Length: 246
Image (cartoon, rainbow, N blue to C red; front, side):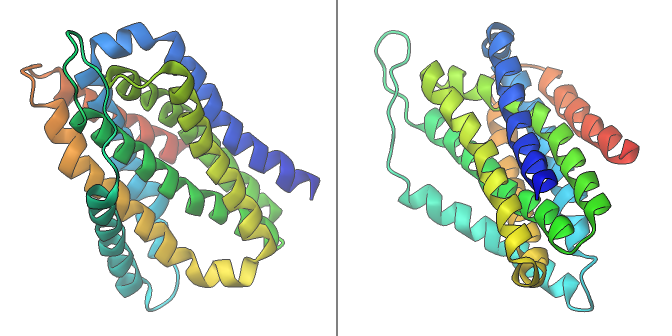
């Protein structure tokens, strides 16, 4: 049990560590917000496939159908949240209010939070099934992935005008959700195992939908040249390196 607690805290605190690093480099992140957002899109697209969708395909003969259903379910959830989420306004320079940028960023953060839960769940299932080595491996992979995740969500939130304290709280909450997922997977391993492929693919669907609908168009819509495109590829390649090494 002590190992599970330490692993759960590790995956959660890695997000906080990434958030702290994001604040350290916040000046650059705000100046190059399009590049930061595009890098985040690359990180999350790679993580969505390597950490969520591809693992979901390994769960039995119905895995493909369940995975496809989960992807579209995730996209539908974000679509509904986009309509139902109340508008949160922030003052831009000169006093003009801009709700669109905040809404987009919060959808991005929400999608990360949703996708963090089944990641924690996967680690918890490994421990709960008595496969401590697999659980530790999954937890380590998640922790490494969470550092750049924590970093990349800071810049877009600050650029959208969200206050630093609230930005840090939002980032920390995305990590806390992963801690909760780890314990849920550990204590309800049979149920979690049955639901895991759907939840993994649902989380992947939420991320891909947000990336395609909001992150890529936004990061390439302000005349930033080729930099956002290359930043996207750098983020994608970085996560592929982590995946290959682990």
